Length: 370
Picture 1 (cartoon, rainbow, N blue to C red):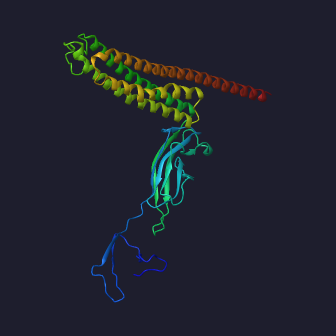
Picture 2 (cartoon, rainbow, N blue to C red; picture 1 turned 45 degrees about the vertical axis):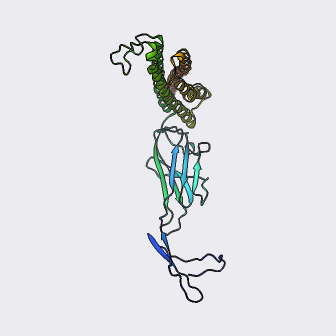
């Protein structure tokens, strides 16, 4: 071991051949008089295998079905312990070989590549000409720049299986999802309304403070009247408002997902955008992050003197929730109108097809006449 030319006077270099596991490097110094250091310096080297790239990517705004003209946004991150070389989205149609769509933003040597929500990697299906009824398998892969004997390592992300459906079929699926979300929100509103009624009964001081409620199995209410029942029912209202905030946040996100799925499948009209985004998802988000948590905080530990203010605040929140619920019902009615129009269009197409068929038959008969 010796100091190499060009290196600082306080550094040394040693060549260590390829190895696995651990290797101990012993350093001994000898001066010009031939004297060695009494205790050699031991350095333990551990060989760490080069790991394949890690692919943590997901589809955004796409479920299990797509139209033939869908755009599939991919978001997440791709990383490697030493450095990336390339990455690609691999799309296979049926049992055929996969087509690789290179992810161009991968910089050679970078250890991390982010595919953010604001700038996802998009795979477009329209240029592929996939047919309705096809099955797609999409998977993201990445390779590193390893130069060891084993060659470059390849990492694979999750594999997603997608069914290619007609626009009408996808719309029907999303409309069914909307109806389920509306029923779920109806239950949220009903739960908060029930908590409000029990609180009102407690404020009135009657025996019906909480008939049949939890902790009152005999259904006779609180015999001590309003002030005694108030803390219990105020706490229940706070719990109901907290539950409603969580449920409403989930429902708002589900409506945003429906809007994104319509957009990614080229089905989002301006009217649907307004209904789903402005009239439903946005006010639901405001309720979930503002109105309902504020109501829960106000009701939790509120004194009986605040009963009128708490009831009034609850009524205001319920009114806003019911206004959004009305928009959901309007949306369902709108979907019913759309379905009627689709039926009319289908009938027109059938009539047109039958007319053309008869015209061809008559033309054939005319040509076949002697």
